[in-house]
Structure formats: C-alpha cells, structure tokens
Image (cartoon, rainbow, N blue to C red; front, side, top):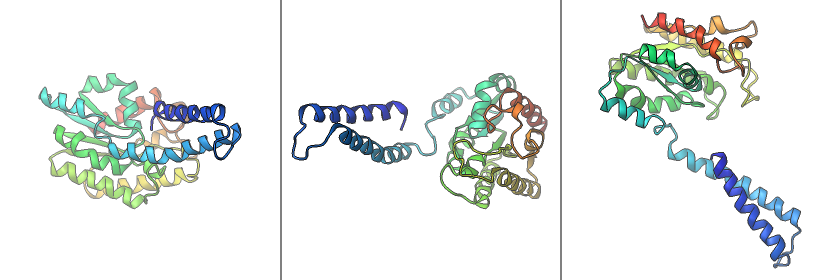
Length: 258
C-alpha cells in the first residue's frame, strides 16, 4: 500500500468517527470521542495487512516495472549486450550513474527490496527475453535482511544457481557478483549478524562460480571496512553505494566484461 492510499483510508475512517462523535453521540452504545478515535485507528491498522497482501499479489515479482521498456527494446530490435540484474543496489546505480550505462550500452534491471526468489521469477521477462550476451547478477542482501521472511543461505544460493542455469541454457553468459558489505540493515535491525552472513554467502557464491567456471566479481574486498561494514566514504546509509562507491565498482565490472 502506498502512502496516498493509506492516507485516504485513514481520512475516511476518521471522518466517519468524527461524524459519529458529533451527530450520533448516543447511538446504542455511547462512546466518548477519544475511545472512538482509538477504535478507528485500530481498525485502520487491522486493514493494512490485508491491503498490503492484495497489492502484493497484483505484481509480486515486479513484472510491470520494466514491461514497457522491454517492449520498446524488442520493438526497436535493439541488441542488448549486458543486463545488470539485481535489487536496489543495481537500480540506484543506473539512476545516479546513467552515463556509465549509456556509454557502454548496458541495461539496468534492478528493483529495490527484491530477494533472489523474486529475481528468479522475473528473469525470463527482464533478462532472457532481451537476448543479451551477458547478465551481471548482484543479489542476496535482501535475503539476509529477510525482506520476504527467513530463507537459508543455501536456498539463496540455490536461487542464484537457478539463474545461472537459466542464463546458460539460453546462451547468456552469467557473471556473479559478491553482495556488498553491510554492518546492519536499517529497515530490519533485528538482524544482528549481517557481516557474518554476507561473508558466508560470498564464500558460497564464489565456490560455486569457481567450480562451474563462472566469472566471480569481488566488490566486497575493496569496499569493506575492518568490521565487515560498507566503508563510510562509499555510502550514505551503510548499505547502498554513493557515487564514490559506484565509481569503485565500475572499473571492476568492466574488467570482468572484457
């Protein structure tokens, strides 16, 4: 549910509550204004999960996000060399550094907040159907942050493996990238061992890549501080890179794409 819809629902509930307070104070079960407003607020909160679930079911994997851009690419018969596929770290990359993508003919297909499960579901539309030569996969952070609930690192790796297998089956070269360091997740402070989990997931991804002759790109090492967090000069929120952070990542991925 977006903020505007939430505000409209709350406004309607409060409007009804005030109406009852002013014009019908003695209806069957008299109730003072503060108590009635409390009931109204509670009703609103109870409605939120159902509304959020309904909205999520409409486009759980984010198919609509790039549908128009994908259609335009295919209609123009533009050849796609490389798709950058991931979550908000990829999305923000081409939003604040579009010149990097434009200069090299890269396409960004990142959606903020997504886990590997959602990426795997939309991979056909946002990668395979575009027929790129290469897909750069950067994901896993939101799995550790439990954006869709708990998922083991082994199952996260399994989703990444499936992406690589789908890419290869469609003659697309996969490149696997290390999830970036993070000391904690500001949206889920309950996760207390983010650095340890990220290091372990990186080890699993790297071992799989080595065994299967897939290029592994290490963003983690040059961007991590001594505590396993993202260096403060490279991020404004300790999770997402800023301009300086992306400028470190760009030559690394360009070297891998040679």
